Image 1 (tube, rainbow, N blue to C red):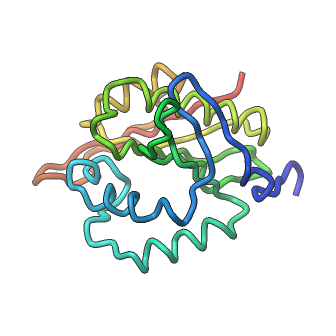
Image 2: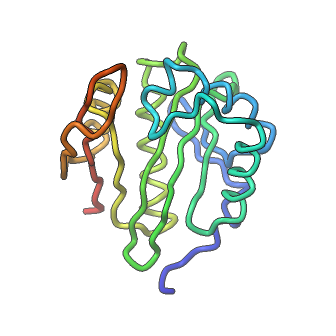
Length: 184
């Protein structure tokens, strides 16, 4: 497989941004992560409903991620306090096509609207393009997540498709936007 990397090589790496540090997610981070997944005000923006997710399911997922050569999950830390405030990930890495999917959550709501998500997104893109030599990153975002859409556009993502009214939230069907960042 051309270009395939061993993601275990990145387990000790830290990526330093202006406001954040990205480091590989650790087992000790799972309790905090699970609390975010179960919080309805965070969960409403995620790709699936995790409100009933259990510690066992989270641990099983973590073991899968640790052994995967197609996924890497970073903890997002505040650069000043080292507080774990969220996670971001490159999933479903297709080494032949040089493509992957991005997922990100700022779980600590006190850090919303303060540039931490933008900084994490910018730095994970740089990592994907320069370290992993990927060419494109896609993501899905619900149309009601205006804050995230603004961040993604600012970071260079372009809308490539709209899936009409395919996501049910709060009794209403919403569009899912598919966005892509391409290496130039």
